[in-house]
Length: 187
Image (cartoon, rainbow, N blue to C red; front, side):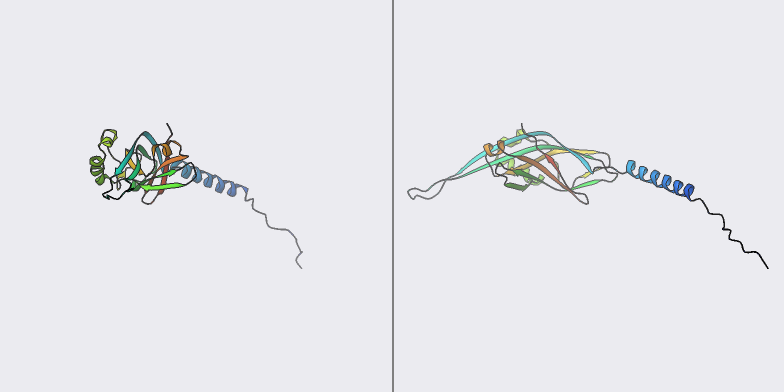
């Protein structure tokens, strides 16, 4: 009769294959971390100018006590620089602005489109000397390249309200990348 043996087969040591797998994963994650950018784009406001306007609309009424209408507006001309950090081109979808007033109320507006600038310059000729080349919607920014241009934003506030604001920002919406915001610095 054969002898009973309780010997077990030799166990494999899995430490070496596990360490090799962890090293390969670490190298892969490091490569992804270094290759993939951490930001979509860098935004900066390089120059800002404002033009407060005060418009009086004369009333055609001959009634006693009829008042003229008054409208105060503020035009903000912000020159924005966008540096594309992706390995893909960026396409600008929309431009706008946000103003947070001293009482925490928020005014959001869309920037004046490139095709409408000439009409605004005719209406308010003092804007023309402050203006520069506009940053246009539907612009493409090549990978690793930059774009710079003026964004003209109209806020229905007075200059005093602008000076006492909590914050103001330019919003740039990209196709496929969402919206990025850059703060307009206070003087």
